[in-house]
Length: 312
Image (cartoon, rainbow, N blue to C red; front, side):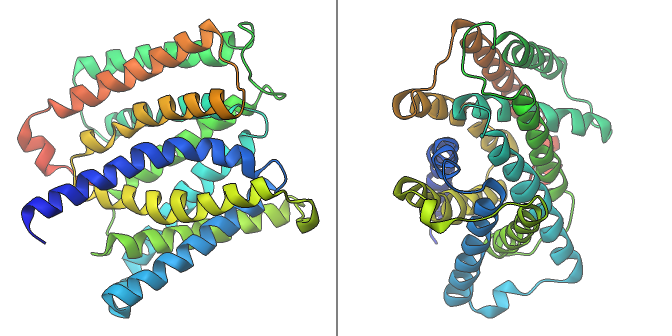
């Protein structure tokens, strides 16, 4: 494609991640109103993975799906960390946590990634650590003071903590994917990740005793689940994998403070979720922290930026 067209495609893909992923938190909430969380998430990713694999084979030929053992191992590992661990725990937690709060807590992913980089031997600039401290303060407000503020935390104290654990899994998967061998076709990689993650979620649902009662599933849940399959998985997840390989890490990371804004607004408008002043304060601190971290990473020396793997 012409350079101008490629540039437009990259930014359009990032726009999809901005908007669609921000809306998936609300779609998950509507889905699990009458569907079991793990089984519905597993079926979602399995179907999305099959659809995407079929599209890759149709448009690029079956050879585009071929991978070495190392590449297949990477895809399987990332599938367990991103769709299974990351998304699966969010789905379970949203039975007890508002969709907006879940999105704000998941915004901590870039903070986790910076800490992982530090453990790997990198030396982030001081402003990055300042962002982490601010982010931890925001998370403390959301986790410890939000309930006293009258906000909607849900019925289980562990719900928000489960979302933080989900964010850790997403961060580890994103961090590892840039340091492991991956296939040339990012959509083939995405398809395998979703197939592996979906299978793991289905096994988890069966092991925990989840059951499906099709007669009890509402039209709203079916529509939300279909939206997650087509837009949340096939379109947005693939767009995320694509832009990780096409845009600087610091640019892609900006989704972390766009998604929560969209999720909170949609939750208030369509799910009547409530956010008190302390929760807004905590959320604002988290978003400011992510902004500081992303800006600091963007201002790192250009040589370092180019030397880094482009998939974090």
